[in-house]
Length: 129
Image (cartoon, rainbow, N blue to C red; front, side, top):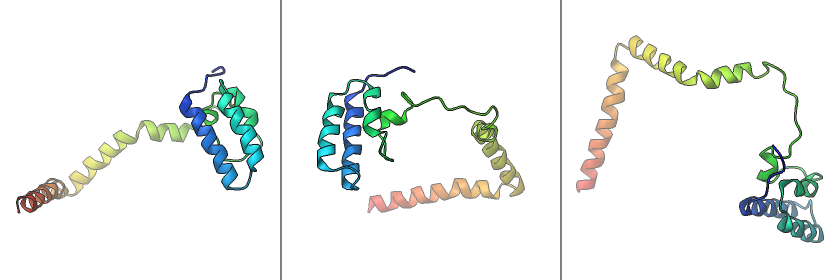
């Protein structure tokens, strides 16, 4: 992806993360001053990497977006189930809704239509008073 330029929002996020590390005691005030000055002067995402590599989470969003993350090998087909579920969630939901409608012989449809109408009518009555 290359070395992306930092936006003002990403720079502010990095400063906020440094403040969090001060609050948790991972950085003292002197380290915070040094690192925050470098964050403020940073122009590219790669300039943030050495400022956070010795710190645990949280991390600045610019580093989490993968702009400077090393390539991680992915096993082919490793996420096949997750891919299947995310691509087929809506068709599965439609099939289940039709099955429930058929099995309930339309009774649930009446509830799903009538209940919102009753609630809307009651809300309308309360507004008129």
